[in-house]
Image (tube, rainbow, N blue to C red; front, side):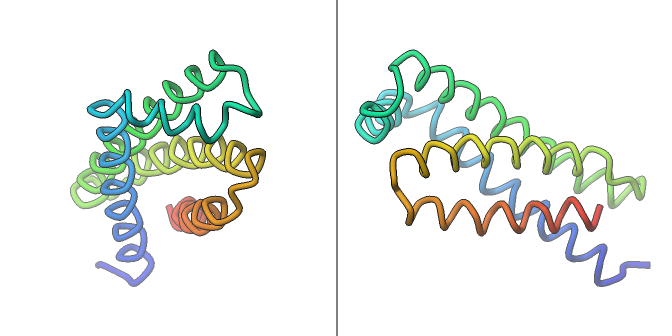
Length: 129
């Protein structure tokens, strides 16, 4: 039976599937534009190599999270298991923490607020899994 808790979990997985696959693919297909933006935003606070490592890490985590959330939807619907979705949400939460750190250090508080909302939703998803 599909309870409101299960529906909420599926909707959260759907949300993060869209958010992280789109964001990760944007980083893959517009690497130059994203790196230019990040170097401008974070260049006064972090070494260029660290920005590159963080960019690659976040891209991998976002894509992993997004695709695990997609797989988690199917796993949840057909096997009544939330393992893949949970791992997807955890990977996404780690990506959000990395992004939040950069936003806070660079004093981009508006960007940090948006990430905080995403993070809260991911934690709710973890609790519902």
